[in-house]
Image 1: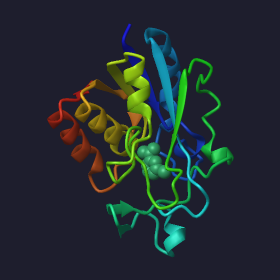
Image 2 (image 1 turned 45 degrees about the vertical axis):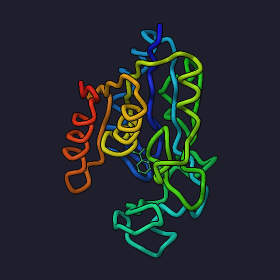
Image 3 (image 1 turned 60 degrees about the horizontal axis):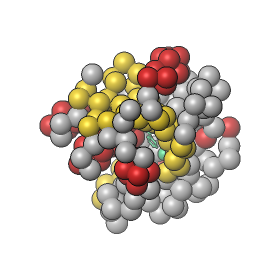
Image 4 (image 1 turned 90 degrees about the vertical axis):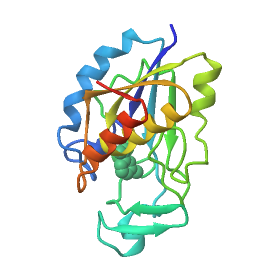
Length: 197
Ligand code: VGL
Ligand code: ZN
């Protein structure tokens, strides 16, 4: 068995009632739990920002969902979310975390955001997940979680670029869909050879 289920950011702040709620974010959890036994490995990612993180609109006195230019490129400014140690950063209580072999945290460097589970938003700083998967011989990845058009899509694009066999199970993802970002990212994933199922 060489397949891994990568569960992206199923955290309270991305679920209804959370600081950066994704519509229907909690609807996918039972289905994700149900998939876990089909995989050799289950990896969870956790968005994990220090207070005052540079991706937060409040850190710049700006409006949430406005854009800023960072040294590594354009960055959406988000409502404050997934602050380390808070309830919002915790996994949704319905998610089966017992089955996880690995929990990878991202976005913990104050000056840089990290959508992808593999690289931060400069596209060069690694999270370590690639090494974990390769050293375990896990080559086939199925991605699910939140949000389709940000952390799921950026993770899928990086995984494909790294040579993994990548499927995004769209029925077990939900999107933020900012200015057509969902359609745009689906097109990018398909062009990169990601199976969008
Ligand atoms: C995410 C925006 C900011 C995500 C994380 O999990 O898709 N989106 N931080
Ligand atoms: Zn974040």
